[in-house]
Image (spheres, rainbow, N blue to C red):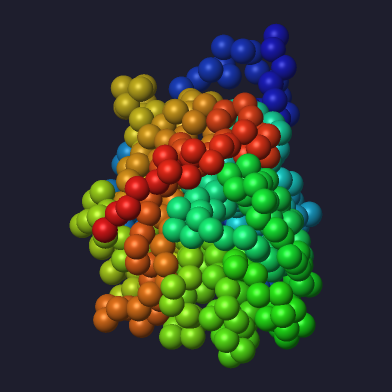
Length: 434
């Protein structure tokens, strides 16, 4: 007799009674609905990302269900707030699987949440899609059979803007960093500094400033930057803090002395409006700018952007696109797994197997999930500018960096790989689009 896991026993509906191995391999019944547990920030500062992503998820679920569902099964997202913290989230994910019976988890915005919760995919044997968190540590420090990231990550999202900077301003000599004082702020600076030292040795870091998370007054940092006059000011800050920093900096004309490099700026552009100065380097954690000049599927891209805008009276920001990527990846994997079983419904293990190596289309390109679970998402970087189409800054002079070109190879840690880069990559990487 084979001892079943608790999940297998509960899934078979026999409480604590153990079953022979032959019964554990019974065909999986097609569900009446496909439940997706979605963790995202619905409260706190990061709700500026979480609430739009929830809207995008709900909108896509409505559209997919109106078209017949995924493989004929309607989908139903069940949302959980990341705001209360990781201990709360760990308990909620167990509840979603064991009590709500969700078939898949979409997890999370915070890198801390992902680091704490991704091991649950192994414990629960349940597919977990990391739909927005950026930490490079997830798949570099462990292997997961049931976890996959349907987007890029910190390494590619930092390296692409750095390459753009060095291609367009090759003579920079000094740089300062102003990042939020928490894991992302510190980790993204380590990635940038490691790559910069390899690609352009000799750039002098004149200031490393990590204001308290939640700061609302950057007068001290701006005064120091005005005195130091660095060629470049690098910041991966986001949300209200980035908006406040830019507004206070431009009031004192800091932007006229230094070039800002802002890899996650896109989500703040609508709030900043005309307050964002032109000619500074901005990124969007992917390739899904609203003014993308040549998306792979223009009808699908414009359909998504316009539907979201009409429904919520604002343009989608990058977490909306990341959420959409998770939905499209799920659709592609379920259909692949069902086809592999000649129309029968897949088990959790069979569904997980369908994700490994999966290439799925997005409106702008395709994303491939590597053997280690990491998604390869292209990055588009450009200079902030204004036109008649948008009431906020969008990029011009855009360059596209293929995901495979700016991601650490399978089996290598990002910081180790970045140290091996050479200045030749500056010329080789990326291509103009538009």
